Structure formats: C-alpha cells, structure tokens
Image (cartoon, rainbow, N blue to C red; front, side, top):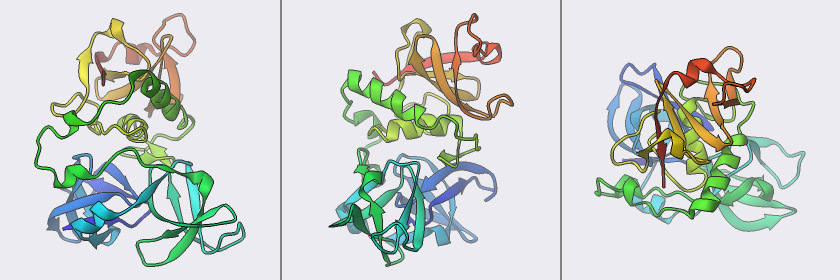
Amino acid sequence: MYGLINQPAVFMTEDDLKSRSDELLYGWAVKATGKKEDFWYVTSHYGYKGYVPKAAVTPVSLEEIKAREVKLIRRPVIDVLAEPKVSADILLTVYKGSLLNVTDELVDGYYKVKLLDGRSGWVSKTALAKRLDEDDFLWSADPEYFLLQAKPDEESFRKQVTETAKEYLGCQYRWAGKSPLGIDCSGLVFMSYMLNGVLLWRDAEIKEAWPVHEIEFEDLQPGDLIYFSGHIAMYLGHGKYINSTGYKEHFGVAISSLRKEDPDYRADLFQMIEKCGSLF
C-alpha cells in the first residue's frame, strides 16, 4: 500500500512503537509493507524505515503518487487558509519541506491548494517553491538508486546547501526532528540536502548505497560533512561548521569553530571527529 502523510509532522518509531527515529512531514509519500497494532511499517522516499500511526497516512494509489504535481514549502511555517485573505480561518499549518498539491488558481497572491482530507485552501505564493527531490525510490528496484541521483553543479550546490542549513539557526534541538519546531543533527543535514534536491542517508553515518564518500579532514569544503561519534555537522568554510546539538550551552542549531583560538570552539566535539564525507 502507498500513502501520503496527512499530518503537519509525525514521528516514525522503532519496533517498540515509542522510540522516535525520524520525522515525516505533510505530503511525503511512503510505502507500507507491514503493520503492528495501529501502526503501519513504512519505507520513506529516501529509504528510511519504521512505524507510523495508521491515522497519519492517507492511502493513495501508486498512479496517484506518480501523477501528482506538488510544490515545496520553503517558509519555516505557513498557514493554509480557508479563503485568499489574511483574516481567513486557518485550515492547516505546515512546515518547511512539506508538499502541497497546488492548483493554477491564483487570487490576490494566494494559490489554491487541495488538501488530503478533501478540503481546498489557500497558501501565500511566497511560501511555495519547486520540489527538487523525487519519490521514485518507492517503486524502484535498483539497489543503487541513491547513488545514481544526478549530481548538482558543485559550486552552486555548496553555496545553496550551506545557506539552507543556516536558515535553521536558532531552531531547538529535538531528537528525530526534521521541522523548524525542532531538529536533530542528522535531520538538519538531511533537510538541507533534500531541499536542494539530494537525498542522503538520514542518520549520522556514511552508509553504503547512499551518495556520500569519505574524504580527508584537510579536504573539507563548504557543504561537506563532519562525522563525530554519534553526531554529524556541515562544514561552512573558514574553520566553521553548523550543527544541531543538545549541548546545554546551545540546545539547537548553532555555528561552532574547529579552531582552538576561536571563542566558539568546542574541544569536546573536535576530539570526537571520526571521519569526513562529501557528495563530490
């Protein structure tokens, strides 16, 4: 069974149906291959697996997923309104990275959208952008699907992915989170890459069959990844990196330094660096 996430955000859980492992956002496609109690066991469009509540998934056909035309939400938070005006009732609130079925109807700066519960609403055109990633993995039989993703232009991608990561600055740390309400270390990296069209492995590790390979620390460039023990960060250049951390002095997305002489240097993390990785 195929389906679309019908809640603004829902946590994926492990086998105990309690421990959070990931977060799925509105409009994301999944493939259900099993069930336990009131949960579906699903695979996401980026290859991650776990349990989500059945009520959070609207069943759709594979043909509907393939045929849908959606837009990506690029604002941190945006309301879907009942009418194309600021004072209208709020039907739904969605977060950056969500996907909406947008029609061609434009009124006073609002696009008409079709929600998964059958209602229609209106969203400011300023919140919408072209989606750059794809759902094709859900029906692909190629074990190297993610390795075969077309690589973006290196120079522009490095600039865009670091700017995207910085859009989450100040966001609180949330275990397994991937929304502006709270995001974890690998969620920050994953979302920054996904919003720019590249699907990575969701956890803080270099995993075979996903498009990051190990590089030397000395070869780090902006947009490359730094892997610590159980943690991940994105290198920004000039000795700086961005990460989402539960560290008591930050508790969220912050920029730190690899240079001992800088006030934002974290010796604890520097000593935990295990490897570095790059898409290029």
